Length: 227
Image 1: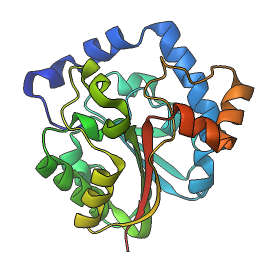
Image 2: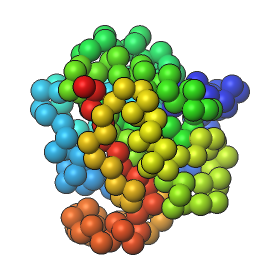
Image 3: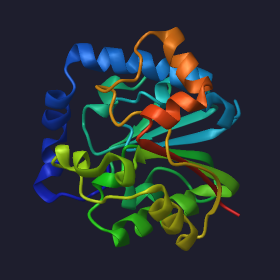
């Protein structure tokens, strides 16, 4: 997560421990194992350097095969949940350059991160850091609530501060110098507590059956490239 909330930054471990209990975290981790293997792995070459922005409990970075895996988050619990071989940096995203050299990352991944930033200016600053970290041709994958579809439920989480639709996210990426190459208004349901099927084979079916995403999906998926 970014340096967005003052005193809240020191309470992130307590906030997310309360939001996701042990059983829920394990269930979420199992979902992500399937989602990474059956969907996101296609975006990640085995020799890639991958950044997980706002990595949280490392659900993405733990389940992706890559030459170098880097998790960035202010939550001190992130290091405890990282798999062996994952580098963890407890930093705000605005200081991404302290974790990775410019022009060396192949992929940056941000799941449910940018809605926590304090303003459009903060988003542009983070995107500039990501762009600097990526090599030419490197990509950023963004998955987050689509406020146009979620509506008032966006504010059910008190640390949500920056509402974005897929159109707003696309515009921000273009202003930051990225080229959007894939944009889905609807991908996954709003939260893992919602109606995304929990059994692995049902998750695989959901990922392959786009009409189900049109029905249940309230998170966007945007993929952009550094020219």
